[in-house]
Structure formats: C-alpha cells, structure tokens
Length: 246
Image (cartoon, rainbow, N blue to C red; front, side):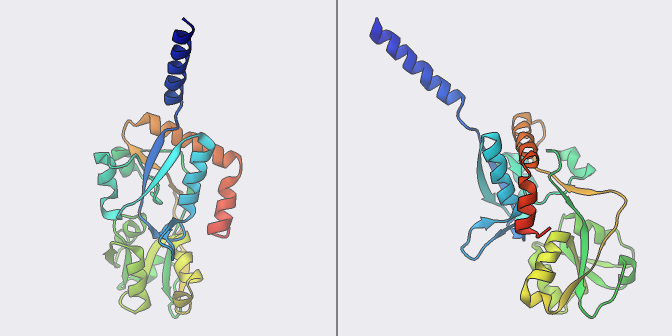
C-alpha cells in the first residue's frame, strides 16, 4: 500500500511539473534594424528588442527562442504558424490590426529623414523631385509613398538604402528615428557624410507592438504580462539608455 501511495504521489508531482512548465514562445526578428535588432560582429542576435524580450520572459515566467527572419516574409510566417510572435520594430497600424493582434505598445517611435550633410531641408515637401529610399512595407516607406512629388525607392534592408545614400545614388532615407541615429550619428563612416535632417511630425503618435496571430490570446496575455512587468520595474528605461542613449 505504501509503495502504491509513493508511486501515486510521484505521478502527481510529474503531472504538476508538466502543468507548470514554462511556456516557450518563438519570436521572429529581422536582424537588419540597428540598434533595435541586428547581428553583431560575433554573429549574435542583439539589440534593444532582443534584450527587452528576454527581460519580459524572465519577469513573466516564460522562455523565449529568437528566430532571425527576413522582413519580406515575416508576416506570412506568423500567419502560417512558423513562430508565435514578431518582435521586430513593428509599428501598430489599423491595416495591420485587421490581419494580426498586437500587445500593448512598448516603444514610441517617429520617422526621420537622413540626408547628405550638404542638404539643407526642414520638411519633406522640400524634397520634391528627389528620390527617397526606405525599407519595403515599413512606415518609413509608406511615408515616402504618401509624399507628393517624391520618388520612392524600396529596399529589402535599410542598410542597403543607407549604402545607396552614402554613395550618392539616392537623395535621402526615411526610417525609424533610432535606426536613423544608429546610421547617421553613430557609425563613423556614415556620420562623416550623412545627418538627420529632421524628425517628421505627424498628428498621430506611432508605437511599436508585438504582433501575434489573430486569436492567440494565450501568447498575447503572456507577452502583455511581460511588458507590464518590464515597465513597472523601469527595465525599459535601462535598455533605452543602453541601446539608444535616451
């Protein structure tokens, strides 16, 4: 009888451990967007979003697996179930909310125009007749497309747009302000020839959110729990200072 009780208790413990095992959430990130998510010199996936997601997992009690995914297929992969979420500087828009669910916002972002140091402009309208580059399917590229008289050129990666600007093949690049600062202010080669002309002012604020497949409430709730904990402890401010300097 005692042996039976011991075996029963052991089985219950195993069941309990399985029940309370940490959930693993696989997140996709396009690692071409410094300082938010990129590959360092040692080929490690690093950046603000990477650290932020890891902190969320630690605080909310789940595990994270990072997956480097090209931007042009990142949303299709979410829909097909290749991963559970996208943490890749995805701005929350009404159009995207029709196709996927978003967590509470975790970062406010603005669009900035990067130009050669010899260019003096204060608003996008002054770039009429010019060619501006942006990463395809980003809010920066959408901003260019909406600007009358400007030719929009799309790129698979923002680094390719910056390289064309550096070499004089286009007249400017529109992208998220931390990315603009990373290229135009912090990378020595580019900083010598490029600058941020201005931050584009809009009526509505723009925020990053974590995208999950429509109806995946379990993952959404866990991610929101993590975001709330990171904000409550001020970890988000520490990570902004580390990666963005403000």
